[in-house]
Length: 221
Image (cartoon, rainbow, N blue to C red; front, side, top):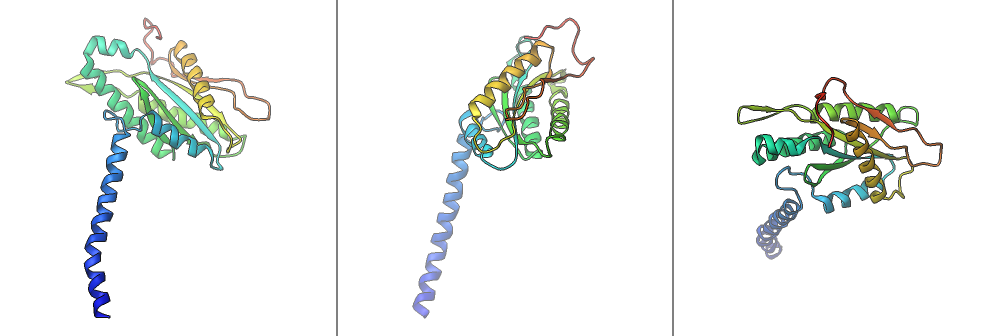
């Protein structure tokens, strides 16, 4: 018995060491798969997690977000300011996704994507989704401070919904969301929701934007 206890005592520090090493390795791997500027998942790990999300029972919405007039921010304030806007946008987007039990990623440049559950029955899902979008747009469009300057931020959001969980094609949903994002951008920002992919009759596209928040002389690009 004493020999067994001695062997276990000797093995515990080794096992503990391996456990710490494994945890450290997992963190290193996760860090390598995250965007260094925003901390969000990069495209491939985001898509891996989004595909897993689509296999679960709840219905899902896929979002694609792009910043309006981002080139003008870089041209006017410099690339360091542009990085500050991207960083703030990524942090806000990630917090919103966490608050809505979702996953967020940075696809590249000033383009982001997320997937979240959409709760409720068919009558309440659209209302819940609109509430999520209003909250997201409000968070993203808060000004960003940089070296004593206030930088206004405007966003366009495209959404694609899938109401028959389990067999959804993430690539198709991202493509539909991207198309809706460009539709919102053409109208000056806000959001645009694609008709839901389901067997029942499709909904019409729903658009939303906050009046008075866009400069009249600006053009969506």
